[in-house]
Length: 278
Image: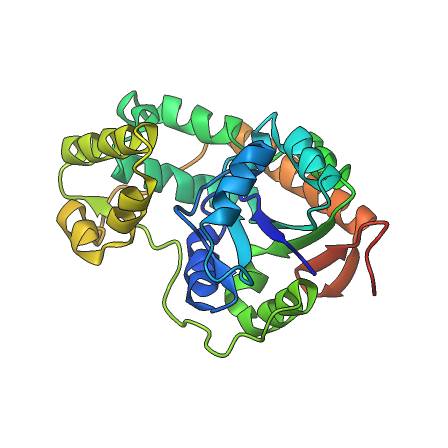
């Protein structure tokens, strides 16, 4: 039986889509916020676990930045030493596509990397890529690892969810959302979005995570800050050097996944721990 479902991102790879699905299932629980990072210490995990009601629910944690968090491997090992069973999910999107999506996202949110100019924005998303070394650290953990490609997640959702439920030993997923994921938006006012982002940072620092998640989930707030992209808007592009870096990293990441995992269907791979069952 799995005690802790940890999705290690990275963002713009279907994490919000998966979050909406898991939150709607009665056997999965997010006690406070999507990016809880409960793996960072045994105490953080226990606090989150205590807030899950009823106790039979599976604690979920979609931590977008966990893949480059230096505390990931040590935190997971500390939890395992306490006898906590962990299933890790790696969302793996084409690095090139994810970078373009991340650039649009950061620009619409008025993030500092976007406000400092196009070159700085491009450098920030390229630097934030998932690398083979990061994947090696994840696979060095003696835990079950389910790797899913973005296309398989959103196009073959039912098959992915069936395998997830099987690994987690939960009831099957009855409803699969058909709404679009990772949809690009345009800020109504960039500086308003920047202040909104700074407000979100402040709420997290103050520990008001439940309020922060409620605001992030509000469609009314989303309509206040963002709108659909205007037709004919300037298309975001990557330089040839960035494309080469991202394409090489993506190819090497998938080479590592296929080497260490068993393919179960197109875009879906499972690596079982040494103590894992069939």
